[in-house]
Figure: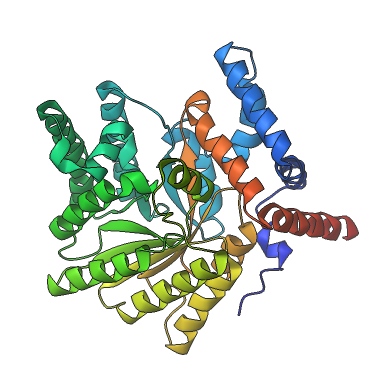
Length: 389
């Protein structure tokens, strides 16, 4: 099995300065109050046009993002690939609400697919459906399709057309693309669109991947039904398995609107469903390809054990591991060191536009129990090791 405490391998890609910068960054992030104050400060500064762009770019942006455009990301892409790690370019501009922005987002996602088609360093592309249409309309469509106005139906068709253009490009260029999961109030529409694309384009290989968030108590059964549907239609399926990142917001929304909380009762229930999902997909590996997007060492070890027990090659192209750039390098780089298929999500976009993503990353590190402490302890260990050399 892999030694995730091997910090020499985990941080070989970091210079001494980069390692210290990461240490200072996570030292701040571990305090929730500092994250909240910092987030508020950044929003105000950008709104008032204070000259803080370079400060943000050299600190939190450079740690969690690849650049402001695809060309900017090439240095990071090449650096990761030199350690055997692929890149998933993630255009992380959020919160847009007009057609011009939706078209721009669609075109940018297509650019990532075309880039990946010519670059073996990028095994996947990815997109969020809420980046292609009004989130309020997507929410309405998820809850009651029979209550839509004529003009809303036209608008939804435009969203569907953007999704299809992206997926058709992926199909034509043989680039697998993830459709990300989002808040539960958007997910029914997202699932319906993902399933249409899967049935249309996964004829010869898994081009379209849907994402399963196992911190929802209904997702394991949904996943099994989707697998059964694909098996009956004799088509391939791609699945990205994750725990999920919106738990606090989900619980708050359920309480405020007085509906059943969609989130698992506790972490143990989430872990059990995640484990069960991996095992079920593994049994269907002949036509189900998986990307396990996790920062959980036990989940990674579990899949590795399944592969070993069944005599799979470490680099079997039906199985990938993925983590976010700037997080859990002890998992990503130790996996790649053993020749497993690993990719990092590399967000990019104009700094001001990517700010909501950066704030969410900082908040996630604060809220996930043990995440920041684990990062810090490993970074401190490697800094100490380098000083002793």
